[in-house]
Figure 1 (tube, helix red, strand yellow):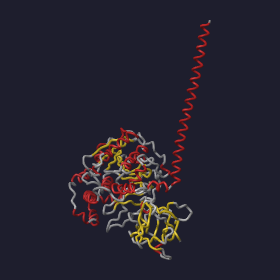
Figure 2: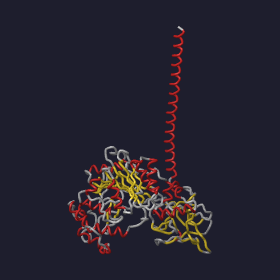
Figure 3: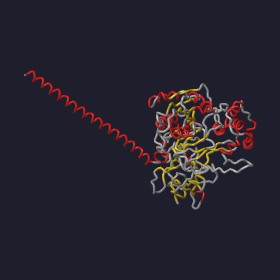
Figure 4: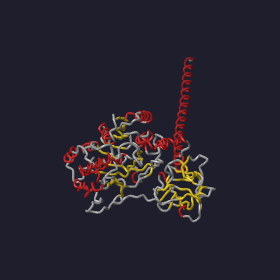
Length: 567
């Protein structure tokens, strides 16, 4: 009996212990789940607050990002432009991870056909001496905004850079933050040039679709599906470009581009132009006579059946026109997918080797293979080209015959009827000029606060900014300041923040012509230190005897004056 009672007591104790354990674990799990919910909620809230703060800060966010505080930073700014032709200081401050950029797609694009395509894509990025932050941000944006099921690999080709550490660092960072197995780093033994480096990467690729990107891009939301959908629609015979948005080389602001297409002139220079007719459905790709060249998708087999890139061309230049002519004339299509958006840093110059001579030689090569009798119009524009004789055209001529390609006359009639032909038909091309609607904030003399010194303008492009004694009713002392950040003289000229401040043709408040008054409050008197957002410096006046010189200085220096608009 006692033994039975002991057994019962033991069972009760075991059951009681189990119940307490279960309750404790359940409570702990509930607390853990609640903690996770709170953490996730906080993450969302923090992200939302940060995004809203950045939105509310607006211009101030960019201003703070680009401001130079020390001479060491100023030296880094100058070296970045020298090496890369963009503001590397700002790029490095933004960092290597994907940043929040505006979704520039039209509303109709969002969610359309995003899950309908099935491909394995090889993305090929070639670089020479690229800044690490820009290159890594290109790669990071791909990993963040590309469905893993579509991304076969990213092939990064170091085209003989003198800095051998960049590719190693890229591989380390991808292994740390993303998926190491999807990155393939290749290094050429010598500098091949962009055209041959891309072919080097393309031959290594194993995906059924190739996408070529430049090394200074940021892909946007839903960027890849529209490219692949168009390849499917065309039965794999189209070469498809995204809409190329602009990343400002001075401030790295991401700006939406209009719907445009690619064209060219008889000097064989590429040009963006307006669409002949408004494109009503942004979910459908539209044809383009040419593409800009840096960014496009193509079926791998179709690309190689067309002959890939012409590897007889040197370095870079005209390869985009050659590919465009060949694709159209030999059975394919050149298309632009409006729902695909990729930002690209448009630099004012190419910071390293090659360029003009190679581009002209390549243009001659292109003209001799593809322009037929219309080559005379090319030579009439670029007479010097007659003296150039590109080597070994026979292979490309044989390729044209093998592919049974159409004539250039057919191309001009069916693909590009808007291009004017000298002595035959006028041009009907419409060029796309952005419309800048501005609101004037202040108008009058721009003077140094508490001093009788004013800034004098000039209608001559490139004129240096001059500081003189203020006088009433002097028209060359009258400026205006608008909501685009332009300090405008007359109708066409704006204050430009070059090494020495000067007056240049207005460009809509982009880059070197974007100014702000530090400390200015909306609705109040327009007064403060005059800060150039792109340069990161403030306008100042140096006095030597009775002469005054306008210069740019670090804003924190005590010698920097404040300026004020006075009626």
